Image (tube, rainbow, N blue to C red; front, side):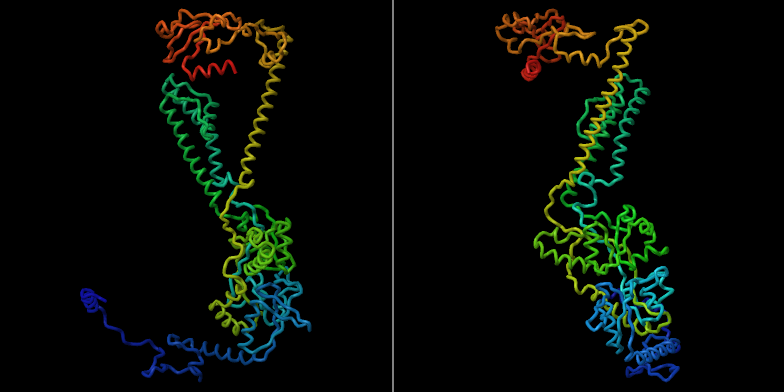
Length: 637
């Protein structure tokens, strides 16, 4: 309800409005007072207005065209009554297929002939069915024994099949103006064991994220090293010693593996560099862990081949019907699938002449792993029949019921129509009726009437359980193998370089005397030779060896420091220890601090017993219990 203010405003606006134009357009069809329609002009010919199909908004200048069309259609209806038509079709189950009776008569079935039967009842004609010898649509380069040849030669009056509207065939036949449907050719393949989004470890991030992580892992170490060197040179600070490039690189790798680092920078700028990388790694690993958990539990299943580009890039073998829309869309240069033409030349594409879809599914897809490309109605019927058969084998295992999966993206889309010979006027009679069937949804209903309302064998089966398989952990195995192989290669390289260096130094010894260089300077034996000096368990001595270190004895047992058995321990030649005297570093505790065999000292806030070993070096023995336990374990175990 309008308010009072709104009515006042509306009245004010109406005052300013111009006067209404009560004059009517010329030649307007008007209704009389009793509701009947009166004409402002006479009809061009003596025909009733109802026969002319006039509407209240039809302009008079089109009346003659409409009347002529109506008259022509009436004449065609009279002509086709009792007429016997020759209709060609294709073996394209379930849209069109035929059956040969015992008397040799061929009967048409499928959606196409349900439409033809409807037209037959409406226009009262009869027909007989023909199938081309090769059961192919045909093209300018594949014309013989095809459906296009039969229609073009006027051997038949009509082609009743869902024929894709291809550009090259338009010069041979006349497509109906009414589009029956938009055909979609779908890919069917073996259902993979795991999702194609990646293996378990690589799934959380896409390919370019992994590439950038690898680049950052290789670049951050040298960047930190360069910034530390630049900082020291600009500031002249000697407190922060520059780390080597190897230390910086291992810090970056250790941070990624959450292993920490022994580097302890002093400068604030260096600390910020280290902290920035740690924050980046913390966020990155958090995202990775969360996404990995989501992928292993709630990830969406995807197929390895979803689009035409996947087939082209991965060079995947595929099979389709011989002489169908897919083959001609590939072989025709100005069609959408022409880029797959080289796959035909390389024998990656197979066009089967077998009309039984179940045979193609089992022979090419199940046995050889091909991708089967077929139009959607045929795919749905084929998978549903296969599902019903496998249901009898195993009633509860869903993976046995659905060994195949269907891609969601169409491989090809084409409008499909009936076809007439060029110059035929049957399209003017049949196309309006076909349009009514399409707009009312009858054609779509007939295409799916034998299928259940639920989706059969969807791409994602939606299983609730998700157990890890070897496929999810395969990347872990690869990493382990790569790590062991790399370490083995590095170890072999170390041995080779060590052997080469030892031979080089041995040659020096052989040419210039033992321990002498050409200029008379003494040299040490190679690390290779020094490393083998201790392999001999006997009494033989190698060159350059010393016996001084062999007489060094370990400290006395920790318990003997505080008990009265010092004399017995001291008598043992293996424990030749002396009391330490004159130690300058440390604070001497009270008299109770003096114990047999050592002096108790407080060094850097910790208690030690100071001993003098035979070579004159001071030996510190920790007194605190944890440190003492580690000390005792080191020398006794």
